[in-house]
Every structure is written in C-alpha cells, then in structure tokens.
Image (tube, rainbow over all chains, first blue to last red; front, side, top):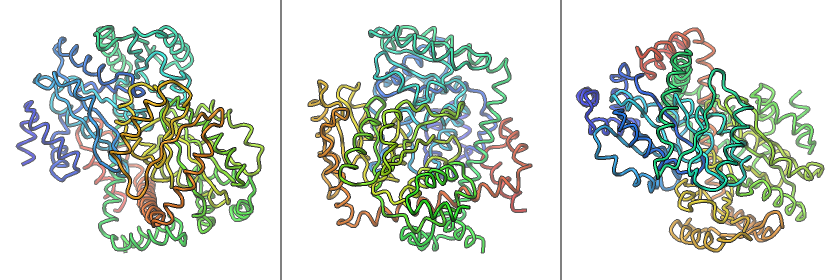
Length: 311
Length: 311
C-alpha cells in the first residue's frame, strides 16, 4: 500500500500526500515505509519557518505569503504546528479558517499538526512532515508555529529561513528579546505596521540586529500589514535572497548536515527506548513505583531497566 | 566530594545547594552521584509552576508570592527557566533583578536556569533541579517559565500546582486559549488586574473554566496586582487549598507515579543514546553524510548506527 500511495504523492496527488502525513503523524509502520521510499526525493524545497508571539498575526501573514507565492508560480505546503493540550489532545484551529480560500488551489497544501506530549515527539514528527511535503514537489514548505519557547528553537533548526514576526506595542519589548526568539531570525518582520509604535519597534529591532550580527547575512527588518497585503513583495524578495545567500555561502550544505546529524541521533534514541519498553515492559511499573516512593533515584532505575532489557 | 556537599545541602547550606545545582546543570558525574544520594530526601516540597505569556508580570508575581510565603514562615526555592538562544547559550536575566532583595533571605533560594538546545535536555534537567531544591528542605519550590509552548506543558508535568498568569487586553483572548496553556492551569490569575478590561478577561476565563472542568477541582480565577501586593493572600490560600485537594483525592500519589514513569523512560533514553554515541562515534559522521545527501533516510541510518554500536 505505501508504495502505491508514495508514487501518487510523488506525482503530486493531494489525497496521497494527506494520507502519508496521517501515517507519519500516527507513527505507523506505513508512515516509516513511506518515508524510506520517498526520502531520496526530498531536499528540493525551501523550508521557511514563521514564528512570533501570540497575537502577532502569523497565520494571516502565512496565508498572505502563500497567496503571493502562488502569483509568482511557486507551489506551497504549509504545516501549522499547534501546541496541544495534554488533556484534550486537540488543537483549536481558529486561525486555519483564515486560510480556507487557499485549500481549493491545487498548488497549495495545508496541514495542521498538533504537538505531541510524548518524549521527543515534536521535532522528529515535524521533520518528517516537512520531508513528506518536500518530496511531494512543493517549492516552498512553510512551518508556522504558535507561541514562543523551545518549539521555536527546534523549528529554526528544521527551517532554512526563519522569520520572526513582531508587532508594535506588544508589551515590554525586552521580553521578546529575553525569550531568545529574535536571535533565531533570518528575517525580522514587524506585522500590523500601521499601528502606532511601529517605528519605535523598528528602532529597537535595529539596535538588536546591530548587536547580534549573523556572519555574512544582514538580517532585514521588514514592515508588513498582512491583511492589506502590504510589504509582502519585499518579504518574498528577502526570503529569496536568503536562499541565495545560503546556497552561495555553503551554509545550505552545513545546515543540511547539522540537521541530518540531529535526526540521526533523535531517531536512534527513540528506537532504543521503544526496544527497552517492548522487552522490559514488566519492570517499568515496579521501577516507577520505587522512584515514586523515593527508594530509588531515576538514573539508577533507568540503569536497572536497561540491564533487564538486555538480560 | 559529592557526599560531603550533599550532607551540607541536606543541612540547609545555600552554597552547597548552589554547587550541587551547578553539577546537575552541567550533567557531571558529581551531579549524578549527588542526586543518587539525596533522592530519598525528596518528595517533601510543594512544587508550584508559574507560567503565562510574556509581559504578564510572572517574575514580579513570583517575587511577591515568595515574600508572602516568607511571612507565613514557609521557605522557598525558585527556579526561573529562561529559554536560551542556540547561538549565545546565555539567558538574559533582566527579570531576575527584580528579585534581588530576596537573595539575602536565608529562607529563599533563587536559581536561573537556561533551557538547553540538547535533545530532551529541558525536562530531565528541570526535574533534577527541582529534586535538589526539594531535598534541601524548602517547603515550596516555584518553577517559573517564560514563554508559552511545549515547555509549559512539560513543566505542568513537573509541578503539583500550575498557575497560569493572564493580563487584561493582551491581544486576542482566543489566542491564549488556542495555545492550550489555560488547560494546564490549576489556578488562573489575572495579573495587572487594575488595568481596564480585567472584568472582560475574567468573564472569558470563567466561560473557559465552565467548559473545561477538572474532576473534583474548581479552577479558581483570581485577580492580582503583583507590584502592589494585591490579591496575593487569596492566591496563597488557593495554592494551599490545591495541595490539600491533591492529598485528599489521591491525585498526589497518581501525579507522583506518572512523573516517576516519565523520568524513568527519559533517563533510560538518554543513557542509551550516550552509549551508542560513545561506541559508534566513528559511524555518526558517515551516516550523517548519507542522510544529508538523501541516499539514506534517518530511520534506516539510525538502525544501522545502533547495529554498529552493538556489533
């Protein structure tokens, strides 16, 4: 089954793409087989990460970028990563509705993905989703994330070009800097730039980019008003220019190697744990109990668990 | 060396506590030995997580709570988790300055901790820091986090009582709900409640708590003005009440077991990876290259890496 579906996916079939993504998200064997088959077709797409604090209009901006890319005859896949509640397991997808007009375009594919509570779930799964979209032949894969935290840093490691979206007057500006997300930006965007204080945010960001130079690349600070499609052309040009810089500077190769290493180790880790859990399943409850009652520390317990799985 | 330092830590020595935390954060063998020794002394502290969007005044609130707890003769340890840049590895600690008056109090211990970029670094390390603070005999351990994302969900799994801080008029209210962080709250706080719109936020949060009931526990919605120390007593009472609920309902035991299991598996995973990396170090570069050049998918490469480490 996977082979047939993968062939359709490679030929650009949306339903096949959708099906493979479901397999991958569920961590099924079909998903693994599909990725094995399609992997040699990856490495073509420009992966663009879009992040920023809540309320910055990331989703609207993502939609506007996608529409503008279509006008330039580029095909686009969007994965919107929504942090999930550990209770409901469901993501609230209000923002996605704003992109509905795009879903009927054959050159656009949109997928919402819930982050997982599972150990190391997020990064591995996002990488795999991006790989599948990449193999489907889309020119640009956009990874849009909600919130500001560890996720963003991880997603910057997945993307080639990371856009950090700011808005005028969104609380204390130093807070954003503290969160460390400005530093992952290849392109800084001030969205809702028709609001007051846009210039003040611009100046602050400018001071920041002066302090935190990236070798060979001047991080541009662009103003947009996404819902009025203002500043979008300049943003697309900057995205293009950054890709050119990555290629000509050799950083694209370096990035690709760094990411490959990370995926190798993360995958090895999850395979190893899976094995231990399968073999030593009976000991997990007992060792858990001993940690909970404080009669054994987690590390000693983990060492015993591994020893049992290898006995 | 660890034994002697651990004894001092157990006797309440601040410098010993500080030293052990440094070992733990560096992932050193001394840190592991120390945790092995002190682990049987953990499980006493009430671990309180404080989170919320940037600009909500979490740090000021944390400081105010700590001062109020001291008036009730409780000892307090605070770990402030700052997302770190993958580039500078340094956390900007502006907020910490607001707590400086507390550092001279022998009943208060404050530590800033940078989140790590490493695989699975955050959760393991936060748990260990909390365990060390717990063993040092503090009544309350507060884990304060910046941002809103995966980190928060993980930290809710570390804390007994999670407080989510909101502010009036902080952008689109639905955004906060979407981020899923309201759902992890045991207590909801509207800080800066002297700002306009506090009542409108209260109503919205009320609708939310009506929709998302927690079995046996009505999530209280409290108004505070942290810098004026308003509403803090009510908040402390709610924290106490939640602890009582956890104890009497049996959820404390359930939480402790769930957390123990998670730590067991996370630790096993990191030990296993460490081993593979040590044994098969030479193959990592070659396999990385093959993933980067798309001639091998990450899962097949990881399987080969594991096979080599076991050959």
